[in-house]
Image 1 (cartoon, rainbow, N blue to C red):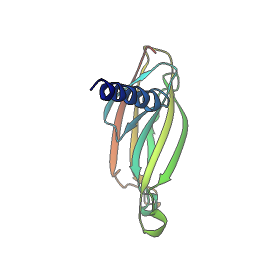
Image 2: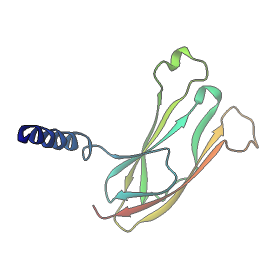
Image 3: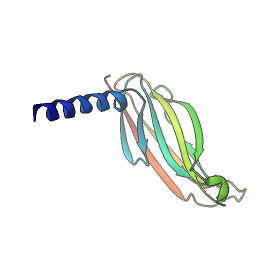
Image 4: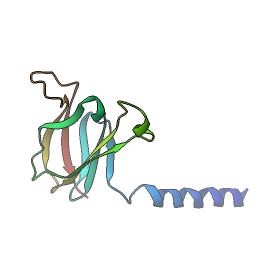
Length: 133
């Protein structure tokens, strides 16, 4: 019994060490407020389908003093090259400024095929609150 408990505790400690604190905080399909740590990188991940002409764009970028955009990248879902219109994930990496900062960013999923006046397919209003590390 003790051996099983010790093994379970060791496994929990190893798993916590491997996944929790190492990488940037990631928000998948976020809504509302993103609470982030000062000076740390964080990521916003949204589903996107560029082959159909839709992509995420900033309608209003965050205040760069509070949350500076570092990089934006797209990763197709597995097997996307074999399926017309397959999507993937748009990842926007940002770095938080100092504690106490607050900003709002607005992302819109828009048709990029050249038609003007089309309404966005989706809109995300995200508030970023930067807290102490």
